[in-house]
Length: 244
Image (tube, rainbow, N blue to C red; front, side, top):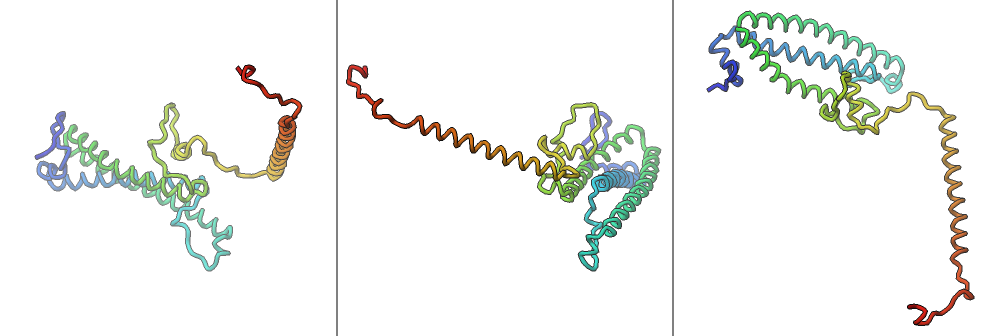
């Protein structure tokens, strides 16, 4: 039994079995290639976005941390510069792989388009997108998790959930902006440079206010205690009629 779409009468489940019966093994082989290249193409695009985000934030991915003879070498500027160069090489390699996958994907897609009716081709294309969507979303969550764990600012932050941010404007938000907004409205990035003069001035102002508040409170308490003193000459006993 096949579960068929009422509009075009093509199956939405057990598609490969249907293809093998009606179009043969060669068509099935091409269909699997299209599906494989579609996923790999989009996965590499996600990898490139992840690597570019790391580069823009000066974050080194874990696969670029390598052992050295001692800690002095691993903390040296030369080590950091080497990591950045390797990151650029990895981005260039991903771009090259992206172009290769794009050619393979388009070639397989054209081949399956020629061998199938137009409506069946559109049906298969939609199935490929739906089947790969879950895997791509899972990969996106994994990359977001890695990015947040690598960022020193976001060590205590939760993983980025795409459903947290709803863009009501016409402006397209980048992945970096979405990650930043997902941390909440009270989230802010630390300043790149800190003025020691401003820090000292703010600390002095803080202690001055604390001391000033204490002096005002001390004065108020003294006045309060003076007003609470009981003078015996002011005491008078009331009888029952006076109370009513």
